[in-house]
Length: 322
Ligand code: SF4
Ligand code: SF4
Picture 1: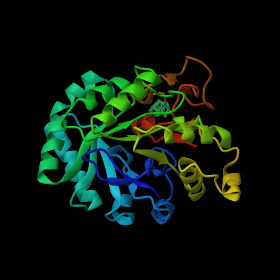
Picture 2: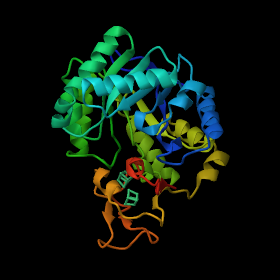
Picture 3: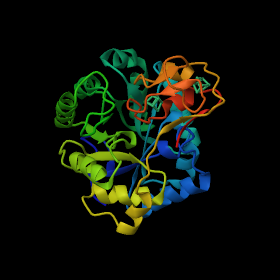
Picture 4: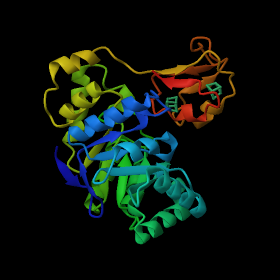
């Protein structure tokens, strides 16, 4: 697999980055041994770049299945210095690594959000100086955050949402995101994209998936692409498509017709916490429309990008991506 330097100060990574969100409890909650096997399959295929987050709760998987030189990126929502230090120490302790290769401010929504995380960023920059973090950066769905981070000396790596339809972008257009990504790469930032399949919406057919990968493959300013997979078949097909190869027909056939969707269990009590965390307005409490199989929350599947973050907000674990 092709490897590439992730910007001027980032590590050497594989173009394909395995995202661990889909195996986490926020999405498929894959049995642990299956998740380990999937990571081993990725390593065997030449993948050396893995993306996780404090929220995904996959540090045990990182600890037990990954050894350097496998590169690990993680991220946390903390916005204070002390909060970020706690998140960093947790990541170091639970992954049993002496250094986290890439540590990002998680899901920065706007320039204002970024400004509000200045102390957390300072913590990461100091940790980089101490050698506890390799590279520092931000993850975001917003073009304006990419544009702002491109100008920040502290930032080494940017993890933006990017797909050919602009699905899931917050507060800006696809054109604005592309311009911001180019600006970031020209400024020496490492760029690894996420949601190139729009959370699964752009992978309904093999042709759609191939189109989505062809788009991102052609972007010279994107160094690597994080793809979440839950099975060996998805992994092999997605690696082939990112590399511009025809996926093995027998493997691709096993995925035919599979679509993902958000599912709310019937025992949801309608507390509304999930509605508050959805940045896409994809959830509504009872009374706003048809109910999801008797649950008290309605899902607008056109708006939902299957990020799974609402699942983390549900105290009863009633939300799943199936
Ligand atoms: S409903 Fe909202 S938070 Fe939940 S998975 Fe869909 S987009 Fe993400
Ligand atoms: S957070 Fe859970 S229990 Fe509360 S409304 Fe959402 S799905 Fe229902």
